[in-house]
Amino acid sequence: MKILLIGNFAPPFEEENLQNITLYNRLVEDGHECSVINISKHPAKDQRFLNPDGYAGYLLTLLRYAWKKDVIHFSTKGYLRVGLLKMMLSIFVAKVVRAKSIITFHSEFFSILGQMRSPFGGTQTLFTSFFLADRIIFADKDTYDAATIYQKRPSFELVPSFIYIPESSSERNTSLSEKLKDKKKVIVFTDIIHH
Image (tube, rainbow, N blue to C red):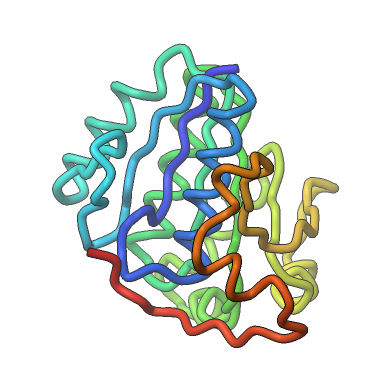
């Protein structure tokens, strides 16, 4: 399958971009052909990921890489109206190129609820996106519950966030995994910058 992934793929790493990178790695490992457009204000470090400049750059990159794709998958936390407009534009482009459109909303849907109350753009953008997208995935139950108020079609799905751990023992036998193998609890800090 040919898939275009759109979302935050840049540091600092936290739930959203780690899940996006995990999804990309897993899809490639399963034999899918994936292209990635990074929409973060920070550039992605991985050379396989595209970093368009500005809204016009995003539009041109989207049009170029959406062609002949089977799926266009947009992942977001939904913080800003510009991000929501990019999401809606991605859904429209998916319809034009006859690709399936999938949206994944990561946690913090309260920001989207704020957009919904906005008299200019937020409500219309989300209602249109919810109506046109083929599948809408929510990464946590709170986000899913908040969104069902605005559900227009039976396209909503709850899929918890995940981080992929390689199955091959050579990749898992790192000094960190050795240190953690007998631990019952581990505290994880996010917002870490990788150099």
